[in-house]
Length: 230
Ligand code: 5RP
Image (tube, rainbow, N blue to C red; front, side):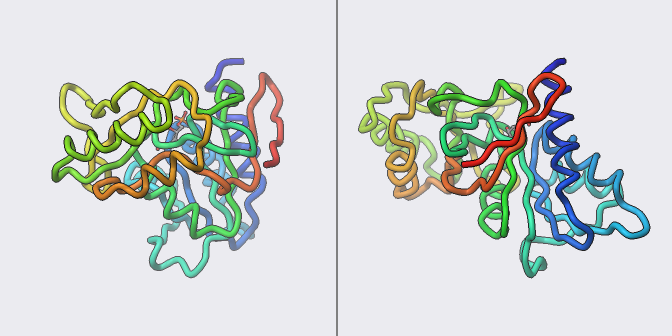
């Protein structure tokens, strides 16, 4: 089984958790896309849902597949959000934002009654930090903000300065019009303290540490799925 198969299995298992009439947060990335496809395949007489997308890319996919969408503001409540992750650490602590959607993802996650993280087996780690931590910053003065991020990282014994995320030589611009810096942390010994330090910086919009947000997880492991609890 490939990682893609594991992502598909996790996405399909998550779609099975959705109940008729739910408002569902739709995550971003390749694993979340499997979930969105499996959810759309269930639509029909006796099964209707509304989706709240976490990115323009997911909104386009869901629209193509016929899932009715709501904006976050129009959704009175979100019953369940299903989304992928770049790393799943102890207690279902997560690094997210590899797809540059972390801000909208966190807004939707925080507005949800329950959050389910889905991933392939390789995403499970003992300590967060091998995957570079995405940090979304406003474009104005972003190099100054990056210097301040470097200082906060140094307080956490992380010596590498964050790197501006580029695609085809150009800065990646998020759906919110911001930029992404990726911090190669190696090991994040105190995720909550690092999260607080980053969030305190003017210019930092959000970071990819999702702590105490996931209620459960589904990991594709070979041909099976494994359920994870915090
Ligand atoms: C997007 C995310 C994704 O959930 C994360 O990058 C995992 O992506 P994939 O399922 O493609 O491995 O956080 O911002």
